[in-house]
Amino acid sequence: MAAEYNAQARANANGDPLEKDFSNGNGYTNGNGGSAHYLHDANMDHGEALKRIRTAGSISISPELFEKIYLSPQNVVKGDLRKTFGNPTPVALLGFLLSLSPLSCDLMGWRGAGGNGAAGTGSYYFFGGLLMVLGGFLEFILGNTFPFVVFTSFGAFWLSFASTLQPFYYAYGSYAPAGQPEAAGLSTVGFTSSFAFFLVFMGVLCFVYLICSLRTNVVFVVIFFTLVIAFALLSGAYWQTANALGGTGEAAASAARLAGRLQIAAGAFTFVTSMAGWWIFFAIMLAALDFPFQIPVGDLSTAIKGASERAKAKEHDV
Image 1 (tube, rainbow, N blue to C red):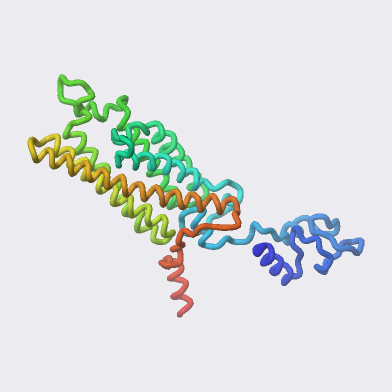
Image 2 (tube, rainbow, N blue to C red):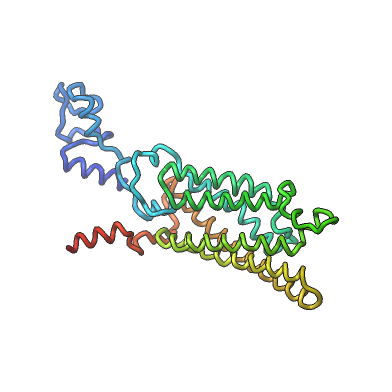
C-alpha cells in the first residue's frame, strides 16, 4: 500500500494517472469528455501511452529487503531479469542446508551417527552439488556476482566431498597398502594427512567470503565466521587422526582422543552455521511471499561505504 501511495503521489505531481488509476479526478479526459485510462484512449499515440504509464514495478526496494532476497549489496544491472525470473537464492541455500545440517549431527555423533557423513553422500550430490551449482548460475544470470561465486564454489565442494566418499573414484583406495583390501585405505596416514589440506584451503576461501560479507548482513557474517573455524577444526581432526594412525602407545591414543574432540567441536560450529542458514532461508521465504511480518537479518550494506559511494561523497564535498 505504501508503494502504491508513493507512486500515486509522484504521478499526481506530474499530472499523470497511474496504470491502474480509474478515478475521475486526474484531470485527463478522452474524446467523449469522460475520464479515460491511457491504454484505452483512442486519441493518444501508442508509444506515448506506454512511455507515460507508471507501475509498481518501477519502485526500488529497500536495501534491507534486497539483502534478504539476494545476499549481496545492490548493484546496477541492465534489463529487468530480476522482475522476470524467480529468486534462485533460497534454492541454493536449501541445497547447502540439507547437506550441512545432517553432516553437523554426524560429526557430533548424535544418536550413534558417524562415518564422516558417508550416509549423506546422495544428498551431497543432489542437494549440495546440484542445487547450489544451479542456483549459483542463476545468480550469475541475474548479475549477482557474490552469491554466484559463493554458491558455485560450495556446490563444487559438496560434489568433491561426495566423490571422495564414493569407492568408484578410488580416493581412499589409492592409499591402501599393497596387498591389502581397498577398505584398508580408509585408515591410512597418507589419506587423512592429504585431505586435511583441502579443508585448510576451504577455510581460507571462507575467510575471504567472511571479509566480503561485512557488506551484506549479520547472518551471512555468522555463517562464514563459523565455517572458517569449523574447517580449521576439521583439518586438525584429520591431522590428529594421522598422528594416531602413525603412532603407538599412549601418544597414539592421545592423538585419537584429541581428533575426536576436534571433530565434535567442528560439528558444533557447523550446526551453528546451519541454524544461521535456516534463519536467513526463512527470512527470504517470508519476504518472497510478502508476509505481513518479517524477521531481521541485520543489514550491513550501509555500515561500510562502498568505493563508489565514497567517491561520490568526495565529489560532493569538493
